[in-house]
Image 1 (cartoon, helix red, strand yellow):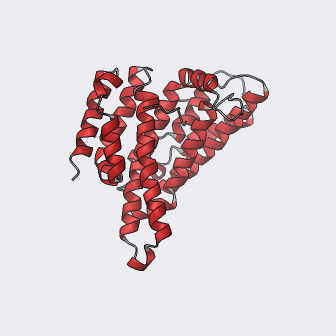
Image 2 (cartoon, rainbow, N blue to C red):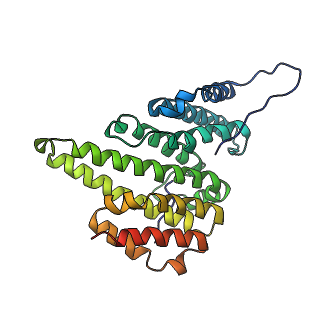
Length: 271
């Protein structure tokens, strides 16, 4: 597979006797972290999305400020890592009740926040032009590989939930509502999700980066395998199986390789 890249939680502590005056982005960060103290927040997808979107906006403000100084984003700074941790918040995501059709009212907005944030650091410093800036992409994928893997881990799990919600929503439609346009859009989403899984495998698991990142993303694919086995279009399912036929040659890490083998087995079991 040859695809270019398409595209965690920290505690902020303040000590000392002197009063501190935070720049605006950090004030917003602290407000977001204080909001996490509400137990209801983890149970309410819409509120989680609102917090993730606000964190994504604060992260964009931070990146814009760094860009104006001709510097590079430091994603390991506690306050910046806290923002990313809120956007890629698996604890809040896992605390949600089982998927339902109404998730489509808010879940896509969370996915958009994750995707937009990922692009800010994976494409950072890229020069515009007809071809991708591979030098910038390589540098970013090397420097921000941990954050990219965290985003992919969240996106794979989030999109799996969205796939379940879409199936439920479609099942609730009357026959006359299943128009050609709607069915074409549904098929397009199914195809795009297969492409996304292949991209995750290529950009993180086969890339030769950190084994921990490969394992993180492979585990997400393994854990959501039943969703993908049922959701992929037959031709895309066959293509994914074909692409993964040479796993021992393509995937350096043994644990990631084993997880992808479980995923492949689930796809093969669909008749």
